[in-house]
Amino acid sequence: MRRVPMSCTIVLLTLLCTAFASGQDAIRSQLFGETDTLLEAAKAKNAHLYAPTQYDKAMEAYQDAEAALKKGKDLEGIRETLAEANGYLQRALEICKVGQVAFTAVMNARSDAISAEAARFSPDQWTRAEEQLKRAAMDLEDGDMNDAKAKAGEAEGMYRTAELEAIKTNYLGPARALVEKADDMDARETTPATLAATEKLIRQAEELLKSNRYDTDEARQLAQEAKYEGQHAITLFQSITAFKRSERSIEDLITTYEGHLATVGKALDMTARFDGGPDAAVNALTAEITKREAESARERETIKRQTEEIVTLKQQIASMESRLGSLTEAERELKRRIEIQKRQEETFTEVSAMFTKQEGMVLRDGQNGIIRLYGLTFPPGRNTIEPQFFGLLTKIQEAIRKFGRSQVSVEGHTDSRGSDEANQRLSESRALAVAEYLRANMGGSVPIVSQGFGESRPVASNDTEDGRSKNRRIDIIIVPEWAVK
Image (cartoon, rainbow, N blue to C red; front, side, top):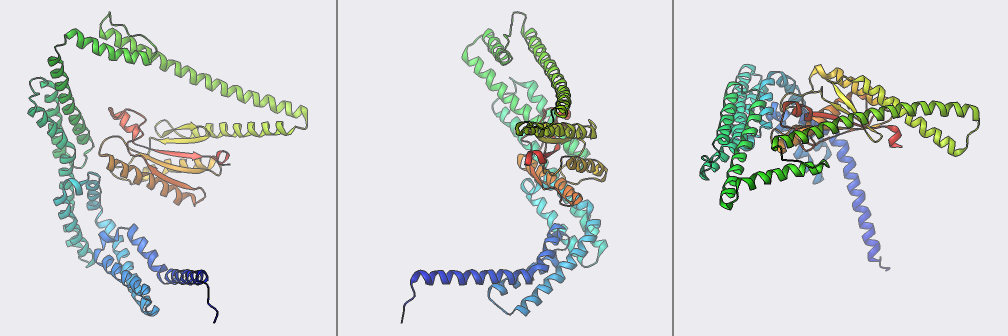
């Protein structure tokens, strides 16, 4: 009897295993297709919150069916188990429709508590709120609407309390800790005004949280400022103490800070002079910065004039072409490039004219376009696109189409208020919401992706409300067809 080589045996076994796995995948796809679709829909509607009992039973049946398939059990039995799961999921989706109306307030409170990281900074209260919401949802499943609404109202209060506690811990806690640290260092005698300012900001934030617990943005900002002033007080104390110990003179201190201003002057290619005092030096530096801003404005105007000259040159070239007749390959390539450039200029001009200053601004990044949406705002800590902004997003769709077969990226950005993690999540969810809206309304004609950058890419200072409002934005990045090719 002829022996089969080991290598052939391994190949045959591999082929058999691959065929078996492929067959199992095909069977699973056929059996689980409807259930997988229902399960994705249930997850998207948060069925685990609105209909926890139905959702849990569905998942239990689903997992039983998966286990039976892996063990190679009777397919008819698996179909029956999946049909049972489908029934639970369909009932859960029906309950979600009612729950989304009946539980609007409590879900908004839950979302705000998540933004404040209540699960981390107020875990006990968060857990109680989650348990109460589950009880409300179970009453909803049983059709007991009155009890469901009553318990949902109690859960709403618990989420608001958890949010409040989280904000106090997450934002006011560090500021209070800095005041305690300063007192432990005996810094109050040295930096009384700065520590008093810190404590005043803490009190103001607390009063705002008590008087308007549903709008925490201003309180968070005050808490951030309190944290800054607390650290400022400690830094001042350390600097003053080190100065006293060093036996340096007041003259040394002043000349040190004059040196800092001189460094700024060097960055501006100018020499800061202090014979008229520090105010005179600051005024000179400020005047230089203002002068350079004016120069930048003039340069922008020059670029505008040059663009107009390019248009004139194009017209002249077109006239020459009509006289020269046939063109060489190089000339045809030049003509093609000029036509592309002309098309780019016309497109950017048209798109820029579509948006008011309040709605946004159109920028250029090489051949790519950036529509910076200042007019699209969201409720604090949420990613809901409100109906009043549908018209603005319709303009965005029209603008994208003007760029031809383009590729689009939706970028979300926040200001610096809140934690890095919360801002990152919020920017991602808002960018995704806008991308999904555009996809749904553009019929998949344009590839659209989304990405969040949190507070990492500010375009203005976060120290003022105007700057923060500019940093809270959605950027639409359009790679036009002429750049894609």
